[in-house]
Amino acid sequence: MRSSISGRRGNVAVEAAFVLALLLLVCLGVFEFGWMFTKAQVVDAATREGVRVGTRRNADNADVRRAVAKVMEGAGLKASWYRVKLSPPNVFQLQAGDPFTVTVILEYDYASVVKSGIIPHPDVITRSTTMAKEGNVPYSP
Image (cartoon, rainbow, N blue to C red):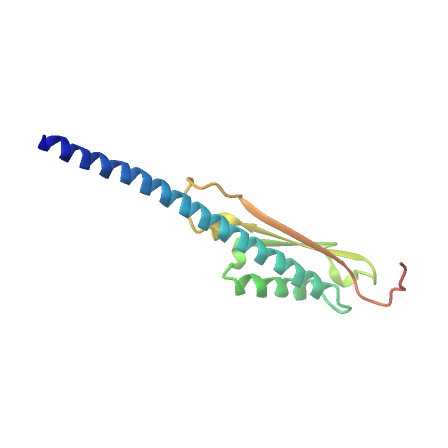
């Protein structure tokens, strides 16, 4: 009779280990996806700031890249982890009213919290923002 009770205790311990491992995995997944969405918001903010700076009258490519870097580095994302694409490639040559797009591509493997293949995540986070170059453009509704 005594061995039957101790056998049940062993079963409970094994079951608890499986349940706790599964619970830990779910918690890590929730944390990782929350972290990913936070970093996606940072990338989005960086594109908005870059395009805002780039649409000013005397802005150049270096101004745009500095604005993007300021936001990204403020969030702890190193310059080697992301790429900035400007379209068209030379901001200074834009005329008033011309569209200007800033795209930031973050290699998410560098920014990930959980560095394992257990929890799936995207390879890159890409965001783009487009605005028109400032200037004396007549209003047309």
